[in-house]
Length: 467
Image 1 (cartoon, rainbow, N blue to C red):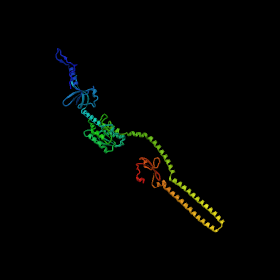
Image 2: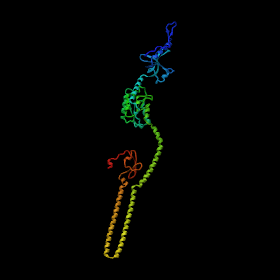
Image 3: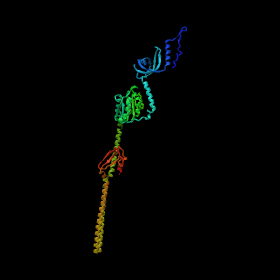
Image 4: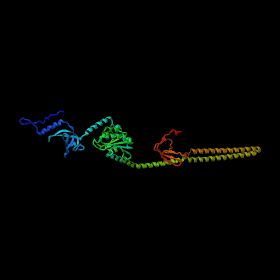
């Protein structure tokens, strides 16, 4: 590094009579300031703050020291307004500034432009390096992020069992979505043991409980306090976890490697609990708003069902086995009447023929022929009577068989043997499980009365069913 010479615009004044060159004090301090500021670029300095002064002007004046040396520092208001939290005596800090000379006193000083707690700079560089490396591997790719279930059945929480974060999470989940059970896996969230414990919890919690989503959380803190969530092992464990992971670490301005690796980042632990759960209070309001419509729809559905039931009842009555048996009995009575009338007519005609034959016989006179004719007549009458009786017995037997067959084919007889008829919601008789789904409501007709049933499960037909 070259050191510039004195600027040409501050030549020493020649002494009277051509003697030695003499500088005024202000000229010398200005020359020194230009030399120092020109020779040294802005630089980083680490040390401990002491003699901190904060006058009403808003500027800060302090001494930065280590075990061997110290230097005066000034940090003006336009620069220190960005420093949070404000420093105090004894803080170890890292500052960036320009080495200069305070001409009024001739004091060497450091004009500070930036200040941060010592140690955070190295951690930030390590943070950025790990972030770039994992991003290059594709560990943070949005395409690999898993969707968060809109209505989780069970929720896992990995955090400290004693911090405020777990209380905020559990309270939020209880208020918003008490339907899902919560499994807490307590881990340390700070210190050397925190990162291995968190990685182990991410692997073990889905095996211990059937959770749909995991909240990884802790409260706010410094960069060192949150460093466990910047460990590579934690980031890889998040991506390898069996269920989606929502990260809610620190405050809204805190960002960790775990936030980039997680399937969803929340600004705070409470925000994580809110992001993964619906608000049951909104559900209640929506249900309350829908109740009048539901009641009206139910009443309309009941009216339609009553009308359908009445129609089915009329159809059932028209097809009822008892009604059909009455019709068949009436038809049987008609057939018997016709058979009786036919028999009476036949007998009447036979008697008339007999009377006519007798008349002819009397006219013919021969006693033998008359006797033979009389014998043949009696014989034929007997045969006719037996034939008629046999015909009547056959007719009655056929009618009895038809009656028995009708009784055997009657659905009422089948129902009396313990069987039942299952009807779907449209009143159609069921014959195949393929037309029914789990949750359907059926009407079951018994020999006496009926009942409603809900399908829990269907079984496809087997070879035994078709044999």
